[in-house]
Amino acid sequence: MKENIELATFAGGCFWCMVEPFDRRPGIIKIVSGYTGGDIENPTYEQVCSNKTGHVEAVQITFDPAIMSFEQLVETFWQQIDPTDAGGQFNDRGESYQTVIFYHNEQQRQIAEASKQKLNNSGKFNQPIATKILPATPFYEAEEKHQDYYKKQSFHYRLYKKGSGREDFIKSNWQPKIEKSELKKKLTPTQYQVTQENGTERPFQNEYWDNEEEGIYVDIVSGDVLFSSKDKFDAGCGWPSFTKPVDHYHIKENTDKSHGMIRTEVRSKNADSHLGHVFNDGPKEAGGLRYCMNSAAMRFIPKQKMDEEGYGQFHYLFHSSN
Image 1 (cartoon, rainbow, N blue to C red):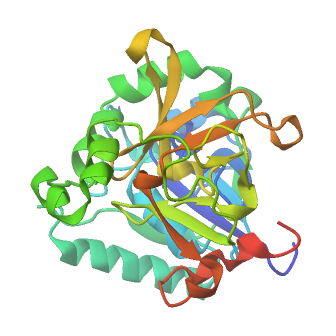
Image 2: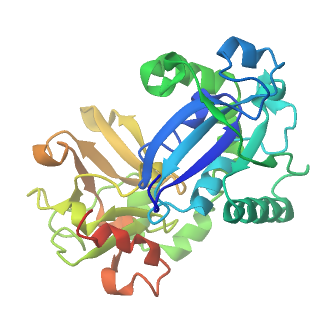
Image 3: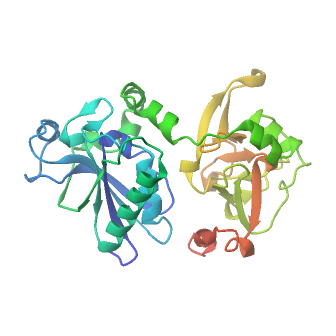
């Protein structure tokens, strides 16, 4: 394994639901669904589900810590589970569905323990955090039909995630609560109208449509990094346009049928703010997408100010290899 590549292993209940949150994130090289923590070699799905092998369903992530830190992965892991449930996850019961962070070195152990303690002390949950932190053991890759299940069986996956109770739990417990009355004080009238009332600012009369400076664009409400100047291009439409987000985890896409059209709306995940729309008329050499955003939904941070603003970890975006 290359020096700058690490493994992270998480058990968060059904492994079908533990791939999508990490997939397409920067620095993620590979995600494999499998079984670990048990007593027998090369177990089958049926054997593990019998709860007689000691194994749990898990995902093993190969990642570049220079881009995506282990701390960030752990934070993402917490946001997919009910960490107080010692008997499984949601509708899936038994030891094979227990939650565990498996550490691969001492640094990972310390990070996981500190994160768990922080969550315990936060008062977010009325019960203690039940997730175990254990040393990594041999990991056995699951059958091919279970790999990337959210892509291969997307309709069934969505039904399952909703029906199991996981989706509603995440929305109720991990979606930040933002008071609109406070936002009205914090945002300008245009920023509020765009982000909270699904508005659209005027083309060619907004702050960043022709901005060519190097830097990052962050969510005006949550501060999450949304886009990079490296992916910005002149689409001739009068709004800032990008070929891709920095991290797909921080956005969500919805079908928008307003104004007699069918479009794909882009919203920020944590703030649930309206950002703009994504279209299929972007540069073909860059994937063919055009993320057409409202300047009022974002704040631009110049490259030279990223460190002082707390975004130093994103300097990798401007390395020649990216």
